[in-house]
Length: 139
Image 1 (cartoon, one colour):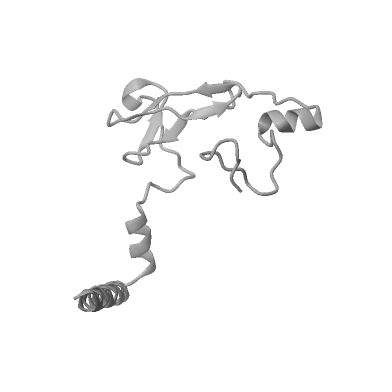
Image 2 (spheres, one colour):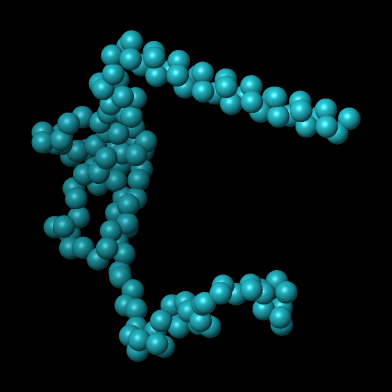
């Protein structure tokens, strides 16, 4: 439904004016209390830096190490990765490909790749046929 006063503003059917956060506060009488956020910087041994943001946690609750999103190594709160002890309870970082290789034998993997390629080729052939038939209709 289009607002008649402004053709560029659209109003969803069934929504109330002020249905956003301010409207919610007015209707319920409650206010939103923002959570204090604490950015913590970690460095991995390769020098990658990452800064996750935590809710208002005590120093004891903030993890001493963090997995590097770039290389998967253990990052510490000190530059250079010093003090990043290997966590014996966790298994080492594995990429998605490594997990996929664990689940399938090379023969199974080859069959999956061949199925995917055939599906892709079929879609491309159908798209070419549709494009050619469209050109014939326009000529």
